[in-house]
Length: 185
Image 1 (cartoon, rainbow, N blue to C red):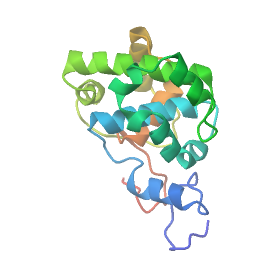
Image 2 (image 1 turned 180 degrees about the vertical axis):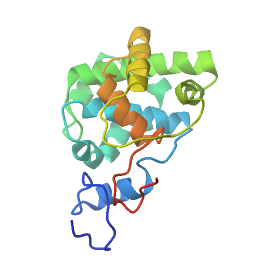
Image 3 (image 1 turned 90 degrees about the horizontal axis):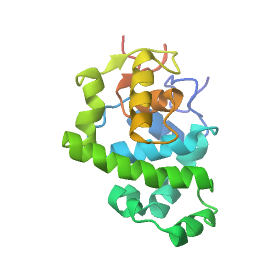
Image 4 (image 1 turned 45 degrees about the vertical axis):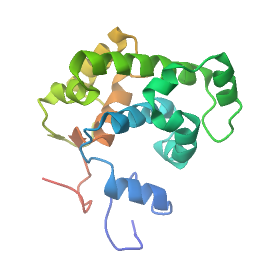
């Protein structure tokens, strides 16, 4: 693939979308330890179910505005009126099940924070704080375990494929493809 800057990137990164290139180059696969960013990415990944990541990424700022800057405590307070306003917001994905899941997931996210001291401690405990280097996977035994645990706690839209994509997005899994200028061996 020919890139304007002559750097090779992962095949999934659209060379015609500057947002996507920037995301690939500066976010994807870089470890995240702040709860706010971990929560943001969890919401976005859950909305991505059945859609392309590029679609979600293009709507990211609209999601940020619609969902209280990804403030879990604020989202927990959403009522029927707020849900209906989100259902009318053409700038985001208007899926009632995903919107309701976001509220539920915010509540559970806060419970995990309280239990572990931070969501980051909970999440990174699955690898003892280590980054996993692997490529060409859409799930793993570890994503199965994390997914199952989150589901047992009551989270929605956290299947193993979504969780594996989340693990990649927040840098628990580093999987830049062979030939990508960010590939690590």
